[in-house]
Image 1 (cartoon, helix red, strand yellow):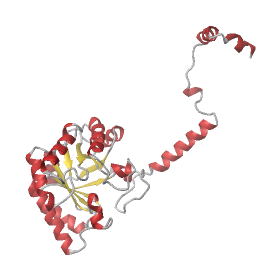
Image 2 (cartoon, helix red, strand yellow):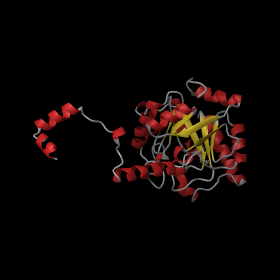
Image 3 (cartoon, rainbow, N blue to C red):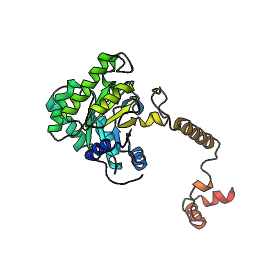
Length: 291
């Protein structure tokens, strides 16, 4: 890690202005958060993707506010340098402004997050403004928004038509005007992501949105090959930990069943005299001698 200086929202805005790329990744527990923070990422996201890669749900929809708070607590205890952002799950910001502020406030106060992320464009502009006015930093998220996947009919690239492209650009500008400090652009054409990045004043963080964004984000389990149900095309696997872990556990099982583990190296013994006293006290010394 090149610097231990704390990443802040102003420093992220400054990175965009200077053309410095922003690295963001998900984390859902203490040991993972320790590692990614040491590795030098700028933003750690406690994403509702935990519903799929950690909790085994088919989508992000079942994830609750309590789930996110629980995992954010663990992550925030570990992270010292990066900015910690927590996702607002489905229906935690869509009902009323009062409830939205309360829920986001819990992620900050109880979870230890420094900012929240919510999905949507023009339709959530008023929600974003209310949160920012309440002193809660907000990261936007447009393009493919997993909480609304049923409306799209699947995981399709957004921005291939002029109509959709213009809508995405309007969404980004609306969020910028509402006061977000950054915007995640998910699964959209690189050309549209480039235009958005040039048009908004805040950093854009791409995931399947091409190389022109101010930064990139990947799901930890995807990039390390830990989630085998499916791998999005835009994900680069930097390791295949599933295979490594599987081989290690299989070796462990084999050694246990063969009586090879634990060996002398991994065992602890009493001093001989104390052991003999113990046997004598238990009336087992004679039995041992007869053996």
